Length: 127
Image (cartoon, rainbow, N blue to C red):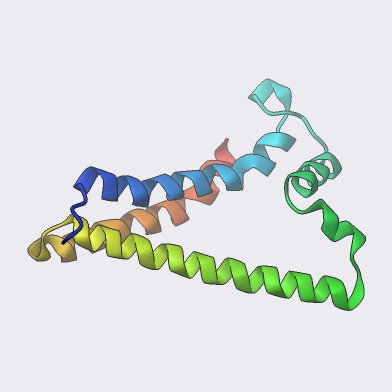
């Protein structure tokens, strides 16, 4: 049995995380922007507290070897999950298009990824 995946669903799986990553990266810039520009007018200390609370607040209580081990394990797990996600998305994309269109689909996704990586910081700075 072969899994049938629609092209729209496959493209959504590629574009969705890219847009989500873009918004996750601009939160800090939005939070420190003045209210007259639509920001929250937070101080950098307040932004740090918000990110710490929404992230891993228990890390503040760790130190020394324990902190090093927790950060190392978290970093390895993050990288492994990231690679698994990217590989899974490539498999889904390649199954969503015919074999004669795979080169164009992969080229389009790489172009989109490069555009988001290039435009993301400039766009976030403009906001």
